Length: 266
Image (tube, rainbow, N blue to C red; front, side):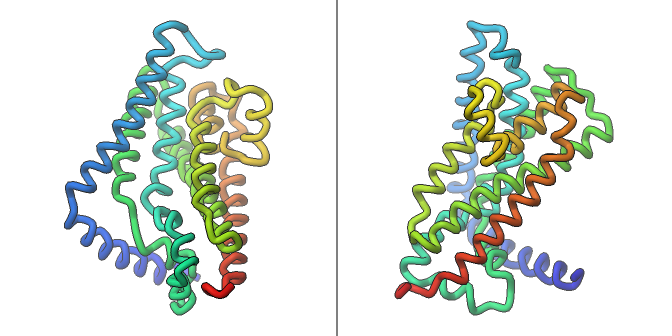
């Protein structure tokens, strides 16, 4: 077990190192891309700030609290941005038949597929997210004790699993439909709701994002634990459970689709 993990980690680092070297030949593209991501999210936060020039709070949530939730999501989603970029190309590879090469290597297929590329622009998302968390924490007055830091890391990893699982699950639809771009785009739009408290979205969406599509656990509930305390302590238990369970479901369906695929003649 440990030997297998070490083998995959070493292989992944080797493949990613080669990819990063090739990407660094186009540093301007990386800088522009990272800057663009920062600007897009900065504009969104400024939009929220403009709203708060006319109101003191939105259903009990202050500007700093909304920034904390928004920034938590940015940090939690950055691993998917960096590591899962290749999922967006699945449809084209399935249609042109080039996906068949992933069946020929003695390594986990999903691992092999994801290790082909990284999106370094996601580092801009990660940095901006941590900046937002730092600003909001200071404004709210969150005390970062060692226990809170451990809880933050734990919940960020769990939330990242939920977000990555959505990408894996929606991309898997292309095994049957051959075109998952529309569903993945819809998934991205739905994930945008994760940046805000579900309590301001209305009861139907609040229930949906807390149960069938547990996006509220990718930012809102974990963030609320740090902001509101024991009232949301259930997030410490449910977020990792949902993260692991959702990932296992997505992984199973992705592998099921891979067994279904028979090449361009399917």
